[in-house]
Image 1 (cartoon, rainbow, N blue to C red):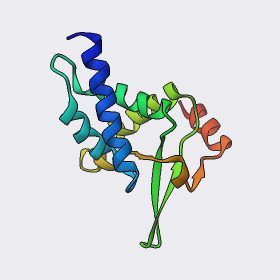
Image 2: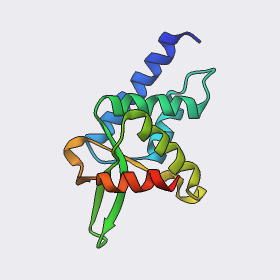
Image 3: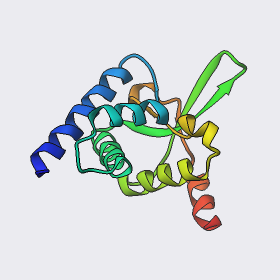
Length: 130
């Protein structure tokens, strides 16, 4: 496999996710399925998925978690941190989540649809937990 093929696959998967984000939030499960659909031969799925997430975050797409408010509204809270920190956090959240819930371990969202960004204090406290 050459780098052009990988780059093209990352771009194609990212474009597909961005189209979905125009309609709604995208869950880890949806992102995983899209990554499988565009996965180039010779690349492992976790590696490819991470590259797609990096591409999306670098393009301004937000990553974070959702909360169901009163069963009527889903609130999106974007994670803080640089690209690497947010990708590492996504990987950690997925691996620490029970398998049945992994499709919803994290979400991606257009910046215009972010309800709030997590407080700096929350990020600091989570770093101290390590």
